[in-house]
Length: 72
Image (cartoon, rainbow, N blue to C red; front, top):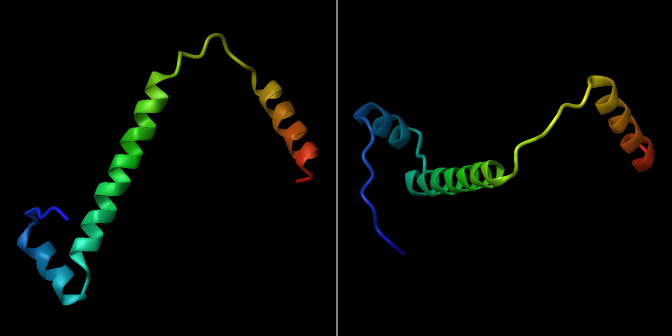
């Protein structure tokens, strides 16, 4: 496992220590979350632009149809 140095403000480090937080686990979760978020953003950015527009009533009708189809 790689070892990293992470710098945080003194008050943040003290607050984490005083609450007994696992800073390593929190850091791993934050990095994982950011990687997932940017991966999704990248995927969305790669999609072709939406052409034209869909009016509100058509969207509501499609949602109602899907709800009826799936019994919700």
